[in-house]
Image (cartoon, rainbow, N blue to C red):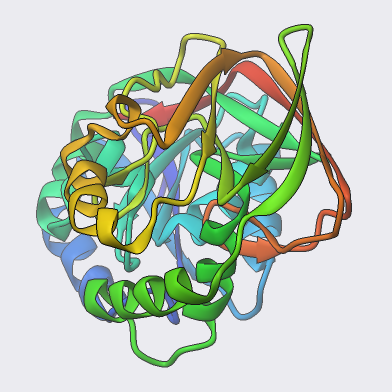
Length: 295
């Protein structure tokens, strides 16, 4: 296909292993729904972890107008790593399980409707976060949420109910950890269930930890969460999905541009839902206006 001056050149990066199977029909939907008068496109499939980083970085180096991440939050994170601080925009077709960032950005989970967003090709400049020199787009953190992310990645069953089952079982077993937090010229010593650093509002499935998060305000939402007793969970969970977590006594949220967290014992962390070992010292900062996104 020959490129014309009026067409945008875009690359779709599809993670064939992501989520619950939507990606199997995406290629057909792209052919049916993408406006060919506006776009010259190609489709690439990832073959290994981190492959999407090199594919998106290559597209940026070749001056593509956009790269479309087809997958979940983990795929989106890899694509964003290759596009941050470039003129190439990130697009999203959410086919993962939780799809937290897509939900936050109001990208439809329906593939046809997500492609309609791409066809409109409206670009917005957003912030990203950096945690120990690793990029995150949506949420990073340490504690219970990271522990659940690790367990969820090990199961062959995807979707909300699989996640909910793991979250409940691990909730019973998981004990708060000790942290020292340096933020906004303060030192906070705390025993916390989890600590989340949010650029968007949620983990996925509309479970919103930081309901007042803004994607382009130059700030991160530091969420310090205490563990409610088991008999409070029946109230705690609905608050999570109604976006009312910040109104409970179990969550403290601080707006900040940077934070340093010291773990007394090393715990599993996560970046956009993918578990990672970050060591005992975790340093986070905002990258203001660092990523273009199709919204």
